[in-house]
Image (cartoon, one colour):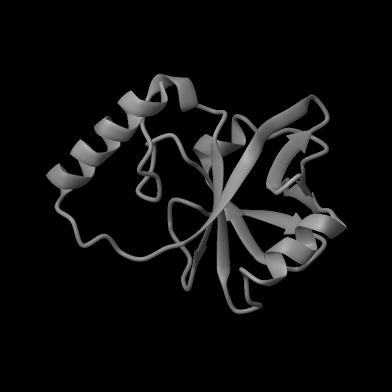
Length: 137
């Protein structure tokens, strides 16, 4: 089985140290409205917006391990793999986490989000996603 690798550069390591503990499960997820962890929506974000979701348990939709130099419990999903290629790395530059690979920058502003189960209904979440999508696209 092929395992994707991501190198976490020193500046990103220092930044993430305050946001991720050794017991956390971290998911590299699209932030384009395509999964339950994203409240963004809109065609302009497809494949170009990512987030690290910090949670306390594995998620069956994110079952692809990402080997990394910090030994984090880091996973991604099949839909995300379409956009991730060789030389994957995360750095921290000018106040932002930058996700890139051998082809260049994938996302220049990756967010880190602590996941909390939503207290809103599906209809409320959909309306919020549509509103945000209209504002950013």
